Amino acid sequence: MSKAISQVPYAVNEPVRLYEPGSPEVKNLISTYKKMWSEKLEIPMVINGKEITTENKERLVSPQDHQHDFGFYYKGDMKHVDDAINTALAARAQWNNLGWEQRAAIFLKAADLIAGPYRDRLNAATMIGQSKNVHQTEIDAACEFIDFLRFNVEFMTEIYAEQPVSSEGIWNRSEYRPLEGFCFAVTPFNFTAIAGNLPTCMAMMGNVVVWKPSDKQIYSAHVLMDCFREAGLPDGVINMIFTDGKETADKVLAHPDFTALHFTGSTSVFQSMWKQIGDNIHKYKTYPRIVGETGGKDFVMVHPSANAAGVATALVRGSFEYQGQKCSAASRAYIPKSLWNEVKEIMAAQLATVKVGSPEDPSNFVNAVIDQVSFDRCKKYITNAQNSSEAEVIFGGKCDDSKGFFVDPTVILTTNPKYESVCEEIFGPILSIYVYEDENWAETLKLVDETSPYSLTGSIFSQDRYAIAEAYKALENAAGNFYINDKPTGAVVGQQPFGGARASGTNDKAGSKMNLLRWTSVRSIKETFVTPKDYKYPYLG
Ligand SMILES: NC(=O)c1ccc[n+]([C@@H]2O[C@H](COP(=O)([O-])OP(=O)(O)OC[C@H]3O[C@@H](n4cnc5c(N)ncnc54)[C@H](O)[C@@H]3O)[C@@H](O)[C@H]2O)c1
Ligand SMILES: N[C@@H](CCC=O)C(=O)O
Image (tube, rainbow, N blue to C red; front, side):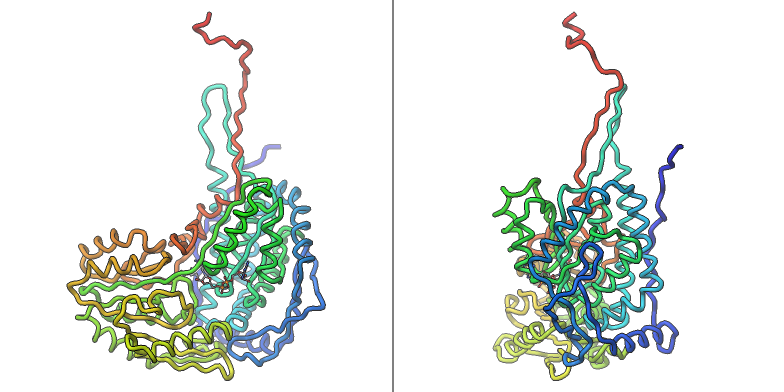
């Protein structure tokens, strides 16, 4: 029987629902939120398709109301890490032997489940557990993850289709094998889509995975795992464990069958894991692949020709959406003196309308930061600025953790372009602004490039094409995702492949073919049809 070469459905970006006031969409989502808010959860790990409970129960905390009791998750220990590794290795052969079309179907089904019956539940879990408002959860948990799944399936087939040329009498092939061993996915709290993408894109390429989500994202991770299982993901392919990050890394990264790390989170954690891998390099059967997308100190550089309203809007959205807890968030801006008053006035007018509170009320633009540690960190930077001779808090500054971890959108104006809040990643709703003399445009570009060790995202604003071209070149290495006349956040899968260099990561571009290539090991095959039977070159007679 002949077998057709299958073509997967053409991927298009999932339309973002608008959730307009009074619409059925928003009513359904908020009523799902309320229902889920009153539930008492007991969230298990999932190893080999089994729900694993332990004696160690950890309270689930909602950032917008830290005393609200909505249940707990079961925390695992090093035995569970061993179980997850062994289970993954046991599942490897069967998963690897399954045709890619079968794997594709599972992940395409997961995308459709999230687009349909899982959408409200996944969005509401992200609102409750990670404090995202309706729009932020929709663009992350629903749309971005659906896009990751659908586009990655298409990229996978593009990779498999790439084949070498064959000369006469020979058939050359590239076989895209999964990596030999098990993969380790370690995911951050801030994006449900990233938590879903890191393990699934490895599994899609035929790999087996141990997945350790952040303990601040467990509710939505649990919904994702339910969805993968309903989509038909076989037992053991992705194993979700809730264990201590450091201890887990110590065990996983010392295992001879460890074959790949797919990490997103802070730079310091990634660097410590890379170092461990280096120390253990002699133990592994094969050199591990290491992909990490990490921190940022993302800039907005404004030319005197820029449109002030466009700049102000980009700063308000780019800095304060999701409380600035996007690795891409605008956290330092450089504004020419001639434009500053106008930008400040428009920002003031916009910020006066921004409401802060629980995502249960869709009119709240800013919600809570993720936990007490983050709240204290934001407060420290605000207090330091209030007490500094070279900085002042010109908007916001209010912090209130009596019910939830709420920090008002805050703008620090500084006369020192190397002031601490301009250089360090805060990961909260705090923007630092440095006003430069218009004639110092070129020097300021240099400053932007040299101020932080990161290179994740950045924007320039200008109506002058020569200035755009100059900034484009001067900031060539300052951002992996570079925006012209737009905010530096909100990359869309398939449109702006995402990732940064320098201290921001390995720049393997999540949501692209480049990332998927890291999870396959190519075998080159040469088959000769008529094998030579005489060693002599023709001229040897
Ligand atoms: N570049 C990107 O694409 C991107 C995307 C999202 C977030 N981020 C970055 O992530 C950070 C915020 O996320 P976070 O607070 O969850 O980061 P984090 O580094 O604290 O945690 C990330 C993951 O690592 C685990 N972990 C913590 N300590 C560990 C250790 N010693 N060994 C092994 N694993 C450990 C955590 O449990 C979690 O699963 C920010 O720095 C942000 O810029 C980057
Ligand atoms: N991809 C997201 C950032 C993810 C990091 O937190 C953006 O482009 O804003």
